[in-house]
Length: 333
Image 1 (tube, one colour):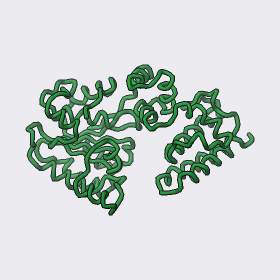
Image 2 (spheres, helix red, strand yellow; image 1 turned 135 degrees about the vertical axis):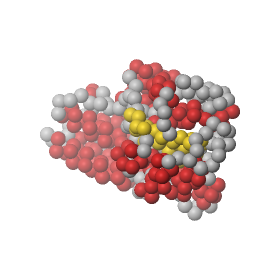
Image 3 (cartoon, helix red, strand yellow; image 1 turned 90 degrees about the vertical axis):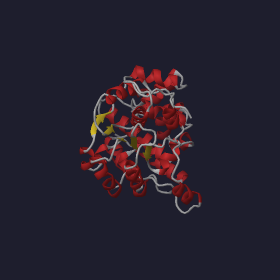
Image 4 (spheres, one colour; image 1 turned 120 degrees about the vertical axis):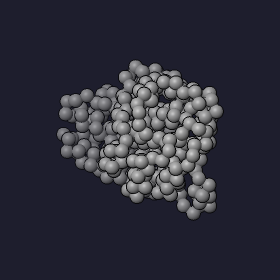
């Protein structure tokens, strides 16, 4: 498993952060700007046997160990669902519990994992280049887990560095934020983002649609593409919702549908108020919907966001969401 070439805006930030002195960094910004990519680039450079000012060499034994997820001096703290998604191995105990169906993979960073990370930080470096702890997404720590990290984060034992990456820094404990050097993720310009997306295998047309769908966040656009959803479904979505056509969402999860409908509601409301849409081309948006019905729809979608991960019947939930959309988009002015 080799590491893909990182995006140019991530490379620039990596070089800038490597020039700073400290032992703990907090990378924060909206999703899709590359927090995880930047965090991984930093730990690769910290542990690399031949690192430069630009980052890791990519060819040494340490870089290879990170790439294949076996580096003895790297501790990765993530929700188990995210670890499985990104190809990081679970602990033997956690994997056995999940395999035996004693529990499902956790969606939070478990306190047991944090305690293991604290113990890891106190051990001697195996490869002699110090140790690194990567926490992502850091907002998935509950208060108990975060408090288990506090003392170590403030007074780390030995040569250990921490990087916390998150999409919602406001959800972190103030005491966690205060112990880290903060870094706000850089938004790439549209030309750079489109060029990078095309280098990932997208056509120019697909990259344009998906970058807009992601609100200018290239990694979210790439995730959309990799999810198996058709980019043209995004173009058809607004008018399909006005017609109550649920088939356009047949390959979408409820969470993906709620996110898309939030963006559609935003854009239709923006146009009603005389502003430009952000996520859709204005020619693709339906003309209907009153401010009152759209505002009520937005509140309903906010409620759905809080419960979308509950084990509801996905088909029935999508039908309900489409029914709400059709009503809101066809209400009289």
